[in-house]
Image (cartoon, rainbow, N blue to C red; front, side):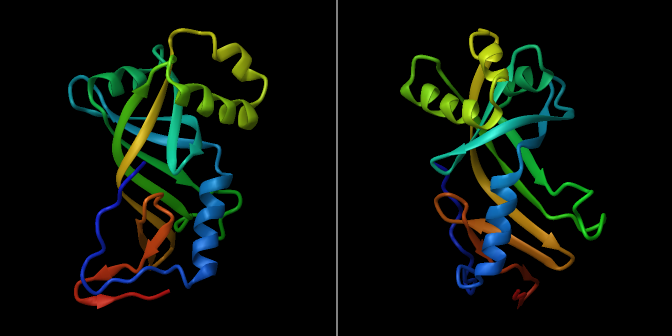
Length: 181
């Protein structure tokens, strides 16, 4: 389970601002693929994407060895991911809602109970294609353990993520002033 950093002094969570929290959860739960940033063998950043699921407050990817991002993650466990609002649904293309997480990955072995539990979620979310992918031995399940994250709701509306499941929003601080939603 992901553990967030402690809140800075003077910060408070926005759990009482239910509209902002629901906006965050709606985006998180209704996006089906992540934008991925990994580091290649020469420590150069590489971008990609992959479908994902949430389970027990963690994010999971089911990736093939044929994909460069999988090879990168086996060499360097650092990852940054972004879930971003569809540009056709965005009110402003310059201020699309997005969630950005930084963290590390770990592979979940096929013989672990967690592997089957998470694959059930992939089957439910992505359907028939999973019958083709699951038996392929070059596919691996990765768990993302975030160490920081942000929800950007629009211009001047950025929130740090906190809580065990990164489901609490923290009022952003710029300099010495607290920005409230």
